[in-house]
Amino acid sequence: MFECNVVIYKFVQELHFFVTGGDDENEHILATLLQGFFDAVALLLRNNVDKREALEHLDLILL
Image 1 (tube, rainbow, N blue to C red):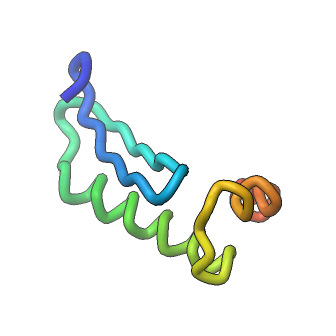
Image 2: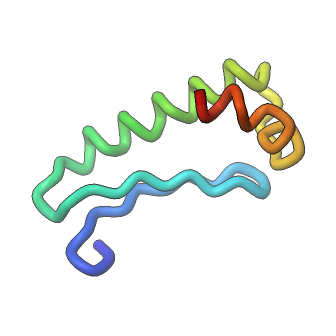
């Protein structure tokens, strides 16, 4: 909990992924959302998830 928000995070090398929700949100759903987003990024970056690759392919990640 951070200021009445649920914060779920994942650190991978130099990258920090965060998902936030209201204090009434389900933590398991937010964790599943974060894992799904991370898996999608890993597919886009061909399992080479690091800062340099993420910055080079930021357009794909944001799309």
